[in-house]
Amino acid sequence: MSRPMVVLIEDNAPNLELVRYLLTAHGFECVPATDGPAALKTVRQRRPDIVLCDLQMPGMDGFEVLRALRALPHMTGVPVIEVTAYAMVGDRERILGAGFDGYIAKPLDPGRFVGQVAGFLGLPVPPRVPPEGGGSAA
Image (cartoon, rainbow, N blue to C red):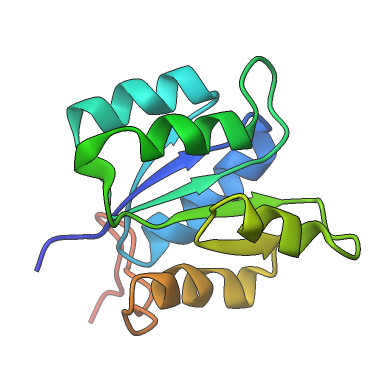
């Protein structure tokens, strides 16, 4: 089975690196994009299994990215999940009402995050993958 491909749209470098690390450590292929236009370029070339999208980004916010993704025929059925610091009363409902398939609030819980992403794909939580060239000596 191939590794699930995640397009991660995040303009905050530390957040991007944390999510990328967590996903790749558990066997996901993570393709980062720091803004909406870069993400759209990626998904026009390859169909991801899931898209994780920040809400507040310069130029093109998460709602605009969602509309553009939904307009691409080959993206039909691909879950688009909002990963955002917007966690006030009503934010979750507003985000889901806009058409996102799911919502993960920041700050992320590293112990739960990969399981949340796997759950949106209907997959079990994948085990941690040893780093390349790593492993223990016998």
